[in-house]
Length: 251
Image 1: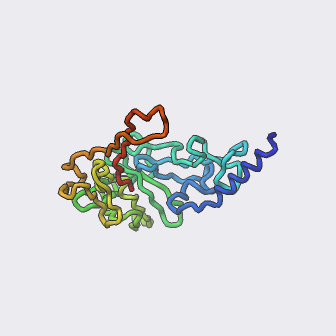
Image 2: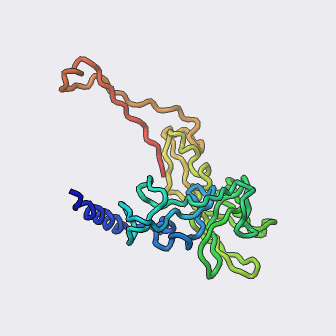
Image 3: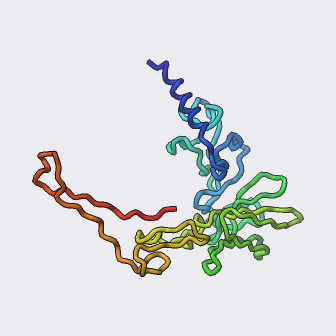
């Protein structure tokens, strides 16, 4: 009765391997991110840097996204997807040990991807802030803010030189590090976020509400339908109520 199990596992592994992985997801999803060759990467919130939890496994994995059964994450409850969670370093913790002298920890630090020419991409905690006036994410490098980069778009690059070495900084996705700068409070559930604009903003259900987060709108009441007919005799003489919730615009 167990003879069919390997075939099922093989089919599932092959089917998953055929799915195209987008470029922004490949950092922790390739065979090079195994064991001691891993670079530091930023967590999804950019509040910490960590290593991918993808490692070599002693036993074959029931689900695999790779060419080998013997590669998998240490945490398997996310459908065996690798996660950036190993050896986590909190950017807010001032007692953390820096990788470079330019790395800074504290309440105003975020994780940023950076690459030195000729070396592997890595990530550092750097002093930064959300500039609401200019609608940018500003990254500061150096103890005396020697370099300041203004990220205007997602994943744009800035090149600089320090200590006679050339580095490239990759801007994070702005909504991930400055969520309130784009459709604050997700439009309070009283509008939808128009992400097609250069500067995404809320489009409130109430056309008279021009606040950033649709704060001046009243909550919408759900539509209620009463006394719907039913073939079930147990509900024939009882009202049946249906609630239709108002959907929120989610990017």
